[in-house]
Each structure stands twice: as C-alpha cells, then as structure tokens.
Length: 73
Image 1 (cartoon, rainbow, N blue to C red):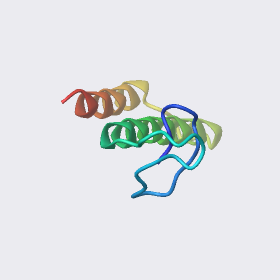
Image 2 (cartoon, one colour):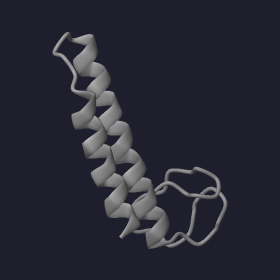
Image 3 (tube, rainbow, N blue to C red):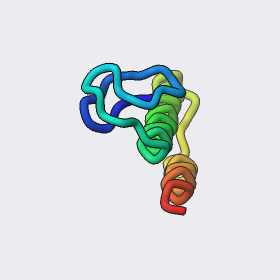
Image 4 (cartoon, rainbow, N blue to C red):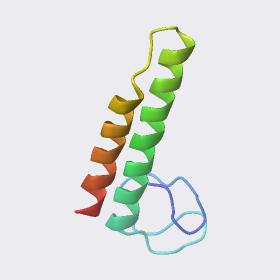
C-alpha cells in the first residue's frame, strides 16, 4: 500500500507507514489501487500501439470511466 502522504510503498496489511509513520487507511489503499488500475490500462494501450495491434481509444476511455466510477461509489 503506497502512503498517500510520502509515497512510501508499504506491505499490505500495515497500519502505519514505514516511511513517515502516518496511519494508513483503507481509503488510501483503495485510492492507490484505482491509480494502479488506471496506470495498467494506460500501459496496456501503449503496448498495443507499439506492437501495431491497433488501439480503440473509446474502449480505453470507457474502461477508465468504470475504474473512476467505482472509486466514486
């Protein structure tokens, strides 16, 4: 779980950041997970473009909207 305060990458399940000592929260974990999902989505699209596989921007944006909507709930 990445600390939202200092960016330190903590092991899952920890209650306090190993970098700055701040209390870690489930909200911070979920926010970090959404960010990782979006980054994976962008990387996948970039890899598909580089491989000449084509790329459907509307599909990627729809997936990104789903990830973001899940976080707003």
